[in-house]
Length: 194
Image 1 (cartoon, rainbow, N blue to C red):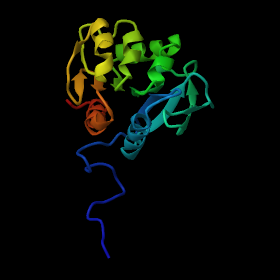
Image 2: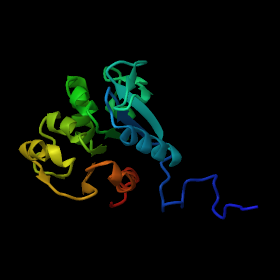
Image 3: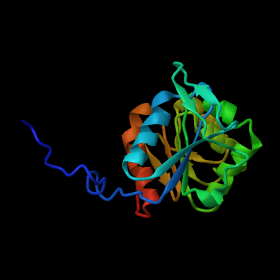
């Protein structure tokens, strides 16, 4: 019978110091989201001990992914308070185009950034950053290549890399970058240099 050599009671030590106990992370959700870009970070941060809350336009609403997989919104933009969270994740797919239509979503992301809290965005997610009131100006970032022009026009220096970290801002290009994306986000949340 095979036995695990690693303790499974604690997330600490599995990928370095990744204990996020006491941290609270918002993941923005809307229709046509990219499945892996919501669920991978959600489970990864939960594994590390964080409380993860899905935030969207309507609390209690269920949003289908690009393939129809549902996610339920726990908290509305109206009730999301920056003081209650340590970070926000903006996933990709077509959802960011719906998310950024809500001024309170853009304000929440902008205020999280202004507070120096984690803002992590992947694939088409930086569309929301482009709409979040100049927060990309003078920053380094990446995204899915198709929205590079949008990111550049919002004032960022676009870098083609699996993950780009600029202070509290973490960006990645595509689902294949999720391991590096989550590692960097956890390091920022833990206050260590990514």
